[in-house]
Every structure is written in structure tokens, then in C-alpha cells.
Amino acid sequence: MNKKIVVVGFMLFAIFFGAGNLIFPPKLGFISGEFFWPAIIGFIVTGVGIPLITIIAGAFDEGGYKAALKNVHPVFGVIFLIAIYLTIGPLFAIPRTGATSYEMALVPFIGGPSKLSLFLFTLVYFGISLWLAINPSKMVDRVGAILTPVLLVSVVLLVIRGIFIFSGNASTPTDTETFTSGTGSFFTGFTEGYLTMDAIAAIAFSVIVLNAVKDKGFTKETGLLKPTMLAALIAAGALGFIYLTLGWMGNHYPLSGEQLAFIDKNGLDIRTYLLTHMANDAFGGFGKVLIGVIVTLACLTTSIGLIVAVSEYFYEIFPKISYKVYVVIFTLFSLLLANQGLQQVIATSVPVLMVLYPIGMTLVLLVILSKFIPTPRLSYQIAMAFVTIIAVLSVLSSKDVGLLQFPLMNHLPLKAQSMEWLLFALAGYVLGLIFGAKQPKIKFN
Image (tube, rainbow, N blue to C red; front, side, top):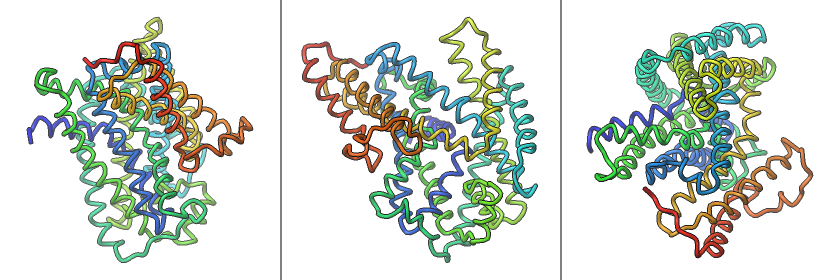
């Protein structure tokens, strides 16, 4: 394989290999019990497969997803991208980096969380983020380039050690209310994969990968799709291995009833607790310190990178406000939300992701279909309108949100699998083909 493709593959892996994402597979493994395999496969589909398919589909056209969204409507495209940038920015992803770092680097050594320690930690954390984001330099990229391999090596060593330590343990007890069948467990894992936010981030950042492929000497004439696909397969293999093995370790990690009671009593997040204690069991106290420090530094570089990316995007579309003002606003907002605590940050993100993911996956599906089937703009417009309405109504009428009383939503096909939007996406696409048959067809450049 071309060395240039391998380099792009590892760059793509680094983009998706967020330190904050490491906390999700162990918990899924722990609670899924005997249904671990369908649950982790579902998680890998949305946590790895769909983001990388999104990257590949983004290479169909040099204009990427911005061009694809214009086929729906320019205003819709701007609103959707704003929603994505806010989600992977100050609303959820950036606060999550701070809250995760606090739970990994400080809480294990002070006995338990407190509002004061959380505030002081995040104040320093986001102070550093603000300072470096206001004056972005190659230093952050260089630190990130060092930390990603160090974090990867640490996780691989943890996994190897963990396989020897935990292989004799039986699967942990199943969450019997959630995991009742293989199919249901797959779709539970599927929606858990939304928490990585990588699929929607891939829509925003696919142009970065496309430019990286071009920088390695590949051109439109020589073909951009093949090297992008090969690079995506490299990244997918590495990510899939990490998520699968961390999930397996969580599935075999022996948490006692006393530990579970301690977690609940002290308001700890079981995700970070599992990862920290797996490192402690594998390498002793040094492992706990090492994983806490590396995850915190990696989260910090992610935080800085996201603050810069979101601020630059908003400055691009609303240039009357300076870049530095955006940096200050988004950093302060992230500081505020991070002080809700990790569990609350994650819980609050779920309804938003349950709206954005169906829309994002529909967009990718439409791009793929229109690559092989002559497709009018009307297919994009009807499908996206249907999915947006269904996704919003589903969330607003869900038991967790409960803002609307709309019993019909509970009887839609595939509702139990959280895939009720899919049939509406396909129906909208077909209706667009029928009623837009005389329209010009979408072309890729």
C-alpha cells in the first residue's frame, strides 16, 4: 500500500480518536452482559463505520457536504452546519473534554467530586484552552501529534495487559431492562455510538481529509476516492480494535456491589470510573496516574482544536464579530456547561444527537444514492424534510423530553430500534424521483 495513504489513514484515525470517546465502550461492555457482541457491533457501526463512510462519501465531490446541502437549500445547509459546529463545540463536545479530564485526572485522587474542585479544575483547564486558542500556533498540533501515539500505545498496552488479567472473569450482569435480545442490544449499541459525535463531525471535517489526500499528491485526475477509501479502512481497523477491546474489558471487569454503591452515592460517572480502575488494575497506581494525565492532555488539545475550528467557522459566516471574541464566548460557555458535571453533559447531548444523527445519516445516504442513481434535487428536499420533521417529533414526544403528547410516534415502524426516520428518508427519496423526474440531475465535480 502507498505510504502516503498510510499517513493519511493515521491522520484520519487521529481526528476520530478522541480521548473522551474512550469512556463509552467500557460502560457499554459492562452493562450489556451476555449481549455484549451485538451491542458492541452496533456501537462500532455508528462509532466507526458511519463516520468513515461519511468521509468516503464526502470525497465524491470536491465541494463536499457543503455542496450536497445546497441541493436541499442554502439556508438549511447553513443552519444544519451551525447546529453541528455548536454540538461538537461549546454545547457538548468541548464541555465534555473538561468534565472528562476532571473525572479522570483529579477525582480518583481526592476521594470524590465536588462543585468547588470541578470549578477550579475547569477554570484552569479552559483558561489554558482560551490562551492557546486565541493565539493558535503549531505548538498545539505538535503536542497533539505526540500525545495521540502515546495515548494509542498506552491503550494498546492496557488492552494487552487487561486480556491476561480479566480473561478468566465471567461477563458482568446484564442491564435486564435494556438488553433483552440480540437485535435490541444491537440497536442500543447503535444509538450509544451517537455519543462519540464522530459521524456528524465527519460531515464538518470531511474537507480536511480531502485536502490531506490532495496534499499527498493525489488529484481529481488520478482519483481522490480510492486513496480516501483505503485511508478510511486503516482508520476503521484501528478504531474498531480499540472500541472492541475496551468494551470487552468492561464486559469482564468485576465491579462489586460495594463499588457500584460507592459510584452511585458519590455521583461518580461509571464510564470514567471503569477506565481509571482498569488502568489501575493493569499497571497499579502508576497506570491510574498515567491514563489520567494522558487523557487530560489529549482532551486539552482536542478542546483547543475544537474552539479554534468552531470560532473560525463562525467568523467565516459572521465576520462582523472578531475571531478572538468568538473564542472567548465559546470558551466561557464551555466552562459554564462543563460545571454541570460529565453525566449531565452527556445526558443533555442525547436529545440533540437523536435529531442531528438521522439528518446527517440521511444526507450521507442521499449522496451515496445520487452517485449511482440520477437524482433530482427534489429527492434531497423531500427526504430531508421528512426526516427532520420525524426526528424532531420523535425527540419532543420521547419520555425523556416529553414536551409533546404525540402517541402516533410510538407506533411508527422501526421505532423500537430508533430507526423510524429511515423509511421516511427512503419514501421521500422515491417521491422526489417521481415528481422531479423532469428536473436536472445532481452532478458531482
